[in-house]
Image 1: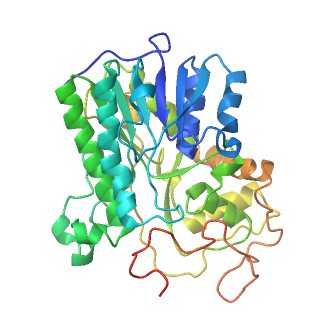
Image 2: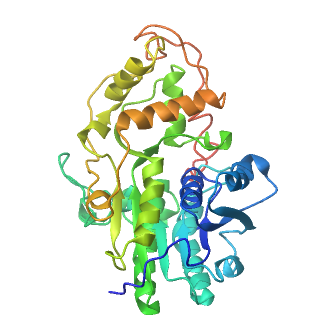
Image 3: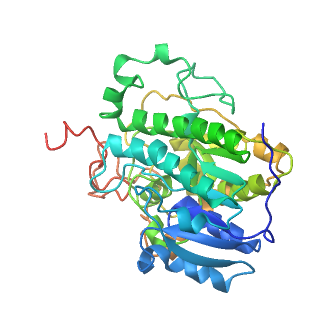
Length: 386
């Protein structure tokens, strides 16, 4: 396997796709704090609500940021920005939560879009490392509840255990966002590893699970993302049962820089970005208990309705720590910084009350969800409007 020289801040510029997003913004900040010249790729650099926090990072230093307009759906649109770069951090993706999205667009924003990214990397002649933000969706597969997922796990393992409507066929991709996303991420990962080997460069996959932590922009409170669901809980809006596997967004960003700088890794290595230990593998009720201890006057929401739990996905942060030397945040710090940033930005108004005063079955308080303000855009196109 290829193992090109690691990169450093003195080697030349680096590029970050999806820089306006939650993870992308933290990658940019981490790189700037470590002296890199960062080319931040965004859709519209005149959109201050999406980009203002990026240009402000020039005041932090010691690195620098310049904005570049790029469209993930257009072939060759990254050709210019990648010229002269030593590393690309590819964090852009179609998540399915944008207006007009469909399951097919989710898939295309993962795999076909990443194929175009690789073409631009080839043309650059200078990029020697790619760090790809994949997803735990490309890792988790049908397994017993106590199965612990490692970097050797792929989402298409044990495909025979999936029902017909969850098979990775083109027909299912057109109708199921979850399959479209997992299939697209897994195929994109395998593609970049194979192409990198041919090119003599190195590509790496980062597979985050439930990413939360501080928001760098008010625009990072978006529907259908985990940091926003934390805000719902603070406002007393209860969701259905969920098992969390929490990782700090700053640890996701730090890991990506450490991957680019490491002399000890090689092409096709993956990194699960998941809970530091079992303290971050928790049920929603346990998460609520932690938050209530931090904010004792707030009626933090638990679950909408009690019932049977599925205790998974299970996976513990290891490789990023042992190989790269990552020093992860505690889950308590991650949760607190997520909540405090939402409050600081004025994005939530915590619900004051007792432990059981939140909106739940039998106690409708008329609270609206900011996590789910409308039906998910990337639904089965045939079911929309029915």
